[in-house]
Length: 303
Picture 1: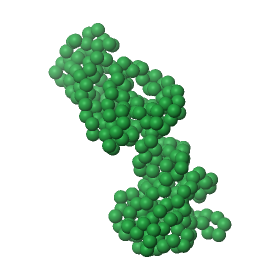
Picture 2: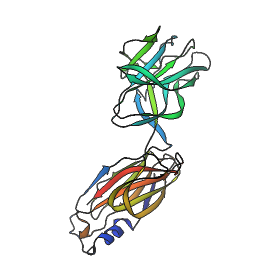
Picture 3: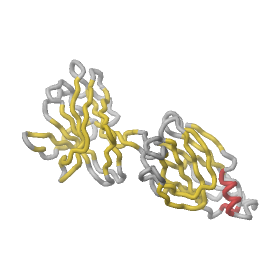
Picture 4: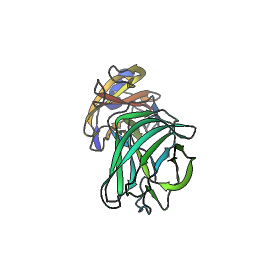
């Protein structure tokens, strides 16, 4: 991760909010906290957001039959922007192409078709991906189904001998069957992710903690904003993106190849910082919207 220390840090902010910032605090450190608030908006970074046996290295044992299967993706407490999914399989002889779908859930079975595409599967055992033409929004606490049909293709079932059992249905004649939870299916769902802000280490007077950004676009500029007051202002040209603080300090940074960065934040030994709250938020250059910007949620340093 990229790491940078900025000596402005909270010293500058505390100078703005307190005329007594030069008073030294006692030697004993005053431990604070880091509290997440608000929500960010999804950027172009796509990562695994749901999986079943998503790290398996076992070899599937059985060849696929001609049925169409749908695999249940359990609900998440967070909204998801699904870009595609992966199956753990291989072709028996030569490259095969299968059809793939994403369905909404109704009554514990697939219902409305949300997206479709194809997936190419080679002879090497591994994870094979289908990608939808546009991300599909799945509301928080909502179940969905990923589906595929091998047709007459000779591919291996994407399930393994041991692991977490997954729920599936299959299409028989004119309808989906009842649900079965009998096989260790191996699948992974890909989602657009919102940049995430967090703190490594507890913010403490006279110590240094790290403000971390993850899930951002790789190798792109990012700005860490620090303020003294929360706000909630929708950003023009960036749907679902909001400015969550009134910024006083801006720190220009760059994400690494994994879409992450670290910023070391020293908290000076000033008595006036006790009880202060400093909202933080990242804004990342990412051309997924007209503004070319995406935002993390907020994170408040409390001392």
